[in-house]
Length: 199
Image (cartoon, rainbow, N blue to C red):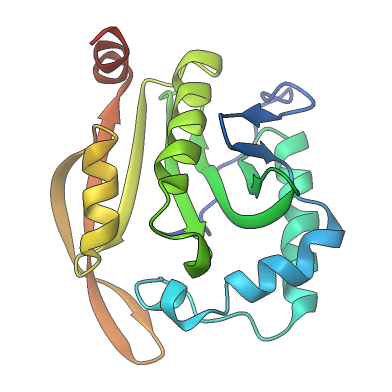
């Protein structure tokens, strides 16, 4: 899922501080520079990058810069990137984010990455569900979107379980390391999320 786009920040910070979300098994919170090694390991894993829309980071310094940039973006209301931590003992197993936030339109994009060792345990659904609830109920977004490589069947299933609907395909959307790929666009509306919560 793409993670790079940015929109102009609103006049005032839009995210409450501190932003910490808890689920039954996970803690979601802003990452710290001390998380750089773990984040770098996740985002250079070939299995994670197989359907990614950007190349692998060249070194751990890039991960540290990313964390600092995301701390600034959070403070300025541009985006929110949270590390996904497995409790007992706390360890970074992934990241989830709402980015390309358009406050006027009430929309944002969802991004997710999870270490392969954490796959198959329902952590992705748990973390994404918490972040979606925060986006719709806490930030009062109207629409959250996700964009994935059309060949990423696992991500498609995960989005559909969360209530997203596939809305179309952007042909030849990404070119990474000489490989051209189409992107599938998914959308979830606040009223659809609310209806799921009632059910």
